[in-house]
Image 1 (tube, helix red, strand yellow):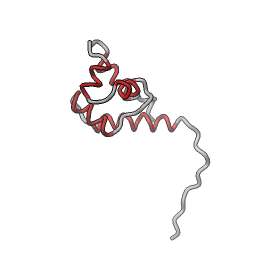
Image 2 (cartoon, one colour):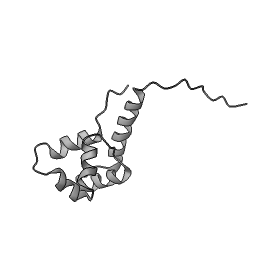
Image 3 (cartoon, one colour):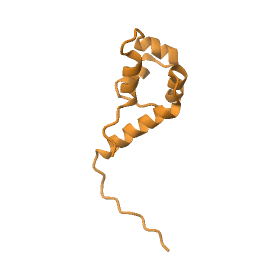
Length: 94
């Protein structure tokens, strides 16, 4: 079972901004988004969309799929922490 995976924004923040002189505004301009859009991602107020994944791939290398998988893993773990209502399994007629 997976343990609380990192939000892609945390990974991006640690990988791009820690120990470098690039600013959020500079990186946002580089990838063609607003500072607010990037800030929302970095602060876990939004997730990585397919378009954002492509932008990060272009700017940082790696793959868009890796960013999308990271987001999906984070979202799934978060959802698993919530209580589901009772859901009856669908039984198909023979």
